[in-house]
Length: 289
Image (cartoon, rainbow, N blue to C red; front, side, top):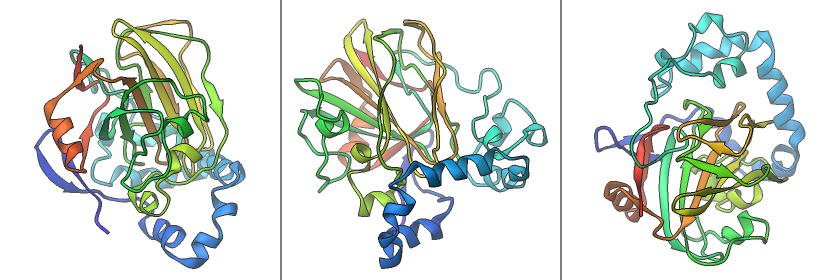
């Protein structure tokens, strides 16, 4: 199973480099691996253990391997690789100033592979055909009424793992934390477990912008022992840091009222063709209506 997406910068179809490919295939494509799901993914203990492991100074030896994977863009890191104290220190790295310029309009909250689901109601299944979960499940039964556009930004381990506000907005209270499992969000896992965005731990923040209410949903995944919200206060500027994920592939789901944002045509077209588009944090996704 090759994982392909559209590289927005070049417009070309690219095959994704998967960190831990063999381990993912064991966990999701073998009987023994699936039998171990309650141990591997049903408890925070395994992810927390991995988190502690990658916080240790001994984990520095893994930095070079991650940095060498195509798409990591390690040259953008704020510090030289040998100045990071642990693997997680590098994984949650900040970038050099100007590495992610903030574009016009409504921008991507994170680096990742984006797919749109437009005009969905609370019970429309996503993110894959055949999925049984919906926005209602993602919100643990407390989904907003009406029609919504959903932008799923899937982060891979090679990506910059801090996430930001996609527009000027105000947050309505603290993040709502919904405990859950810790399945991988890689397509290898999604093919076997297409409902992970509603089963995994997530944190939901309600926001108000000039175009109305929208939601930011941060989804944990295998290896993500912690989702850290770093923002404070209520008023936030477009591009301001919101938080970060510790080690693991993760996802940010943006939920806007249907038609509130006119998403760019290439993103709409690629999504309709069943393809994700590689986007960068701060890159324009569309214009508020």
